[in-house]
Image (cartoon, rainbow, N blue to C red):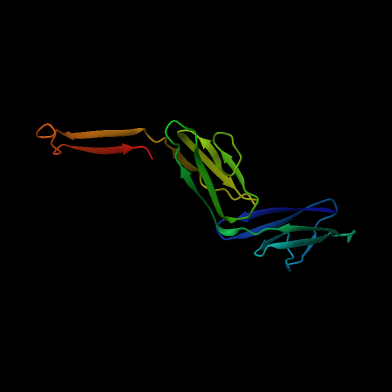
Length: 178
């Protein structure tokens, strides 16, 4: 008899499901989990070491496996902070923030990157999907990094009434840039 544990997470409830997959021996099998469970699958609500001992119908030597389980924190959520690129530069950034779920996050960016954050970005569209260690999947997050425009300067000139007078004026209006 041999046994492996298959783990999955309930991303909304903050629980994990552990199932013992048995090969060899003779069915039916009996299961004894260290959390008190006696079926092939048990709900796990607390992170920590989870063990199961499996005995087959012939009472052959039991198989035991222990594994550390990280129960996801509900809810699993992903957000980000965007920084647009400066005029003429590729210095935009996306800083991803993950809360909840089970640590050991995997990042899949549409551009093929697998890092948590993206830096040195030019103007463009970017998207990411995040997975946690138990397979919970975020919604796709889409980002539009823009590039600031150059400065626009408008002058409003009022001429002096007479030469040498100080009655003239210049008004400056600036727009654009960051």
